[in-house]
Image (cartoon, rainbow, N blue to C red; front, side, top):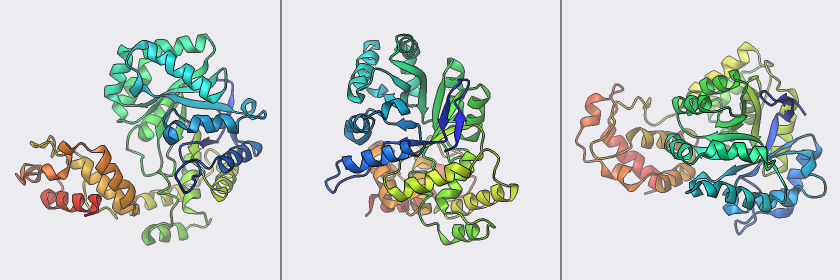
Length: 377
């Protein structure tokens, strides 16, 4: 196993961490406990020393499963990470209540890496008012946590503001070769690493989308390489090639996934890709983007819509469905995460957006198309 320095601290973490958000399931949707425990322990036996979970994963059952997996001496072999469900924090006292609950569920007296979960700009303002960082410092001082950080979902400007606001130990960002300019992106990765803040990568395979059999246009690019790798291996290699990545998390729910990820983690060291191979990954990224149904660049000239429609958000979700052939996942995201006031059905065909779109997109028709596809109508 390859190990990497964890930011400014004199500890080393395995380049691969076990993410416990997508554990093996039984037919009824519950966690397959024997198989999950076996996979977690197998990964640790083979050198992995970082296990990541969170309060809400698997309906609150993931932390309980992790506690079982780390019995019999396995807890002492790993850095254990979990996250504070900040949406449940209404008063400063809630931080302590939730942390103590998690310590109980995980059956441990301390959590090594503790994060404020899924922080965005608006939530960050609320957390500052609730003295979140003061809580983290107190929990470090009394030994309940060792390192304090946050997981992030917003733009790079908000990310830099958060990085600069406090003396963080680490952070966790969504990052892969398709998300180089999305959320914190490459700019955020390098900004945090330059301040010796350890950066953990989540969604290295974009929820499994980059591990699926590639579209023909993309597979043709992979086939042109002098070294043959699977789509997943290319995605993981691209990340581990970057020295700023302290470790990446993978939700491995099958033996073949674990085996491949451990294999790639052995050879994919910082700087190991050639310039030609990095260019190849960039070609694959462009080829994926060219599959998009709507040539929207997210410039937001169309916003705000007079009637509240989230035009760029809808097109981004629709493009994800088309590019990765994932209408089920993207459709669920559209149905569940977009308020009714922001869905395409609120479009009145006023045409204000089309008049200012630099890409000359027929927005009115494309919104109808996107809504129909994402709703499964």
